[in-house]
Image 1 (spheres, helix red, strand yellow):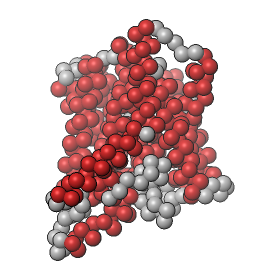
Image 2 (cartoon, helix red, strand yellow; image 1 turned 90 degrees about the vertical axis):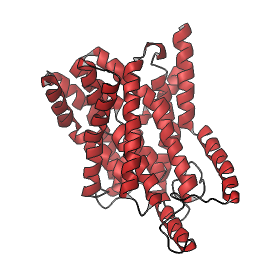
Image 3 (cartoon, helix red, strand yellow; image 1 turned 180 degrees about the vertical axis):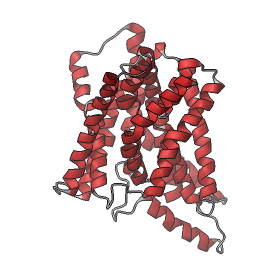
Image 4 (cartoon, helix red, strand yellow; image 1 turned 30 degrees about the vertical axis):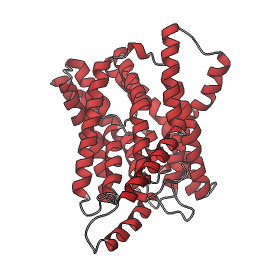
Length: 378
């Protein structure tokens, strides 16, 4: 069982997150330090600088030649199941608003699959199972950074191009008039209804079939590809893996001046992400910005659907014993902070993701302890 001292280590690791969150919240709600435009600029700073440096610095410290690919494959199967389930659920729930179907598929995948592997996962799983579990959660975190987060960014960009009908600049989640992606998508849908005699169809569910529309898809795909190629987070993932392969293959280390320069920025990643979330919270009328219903849905996806998908993936790859328990518990870790940062940047359900991160992190310790106790008995 986990000792009291180990529990304190987990709480000790999580408390600074809420310190940064509280500073951001107070800066807007009580002290009025920042305007809405300045809050958006701070979030862009996090997306374009803090998170990429954090991702790169984290990836280059992991040996790509010593990874447990069976566990990683099980995690990949679980995430693919979450993708399929989120798409099916969103399509059924939004049968009359297919433009929203794409949006909720992305958000559903984030809630069910993208977890806080480092801040909460490392100290908790080390306390539960020891050094081997800490090494495995770090490996899963690396794959999440270099595969799943870039795929999430791709989904965001494709949604912008397909649903909204254009590809805005990467650094802005809203138009000049403050209109979010969801609002623009809702404006597009009635136009499509009018053009089709009131039939229930829209730009996402029923793509145009005329030749000119098909021709325009190629430039759209090219534009999305170029935008992803310019995305600092994609650069950070690719370069991090490339350098890690070189460094661990030939045992080459970075010069101290380079390491120091990277760490100056990478250390701001987690803190600035939580600070940006606090700014977002401070601008909302309620801390539970998305409402009780969506908050409960987010918790169910995070702490029930995610572990169930992980159980299926682990069973498919034949994981047994403590490794199986590890796979389930790591899937029940609280929501990844980066998922909120990008949701805010792209203007897609940031209220749902912020609530998932905040309350998911608050209740994660008793939930994870309950999973641990039940799995130890089985």
